[in-house]
Amino acid sequence: MQEIRLKIADGKYQFFMELIKSLDFVQVDNDGDSKKTILSNIKKGLEEVKLIKEGKLKGTPAKDFLDEL
Image (cartoon, rainbow, N blue to C red; front, side):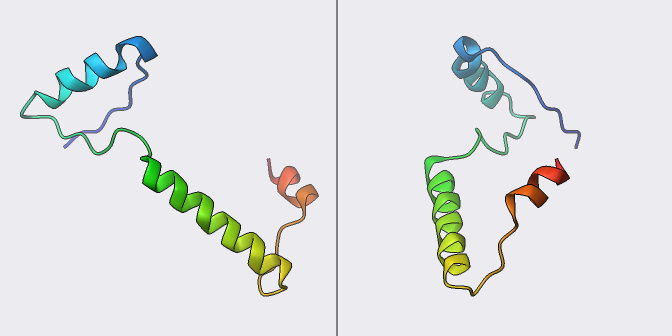
């Protein structure tokens, strides 16, 4: 199976997704991150911050993070 990535104008996104999902030979993996996934990621991040503040996890200094970019 081949995989492609598309950029669709915001105004045409819903129409395109309805169209593409109607094709029996196309598998749509996801429609982007769901609200549940986003909230889960935020929760994990906040738990990491808590562990860093408690000294149970080592954080990355901002300078080191920016140097990697």
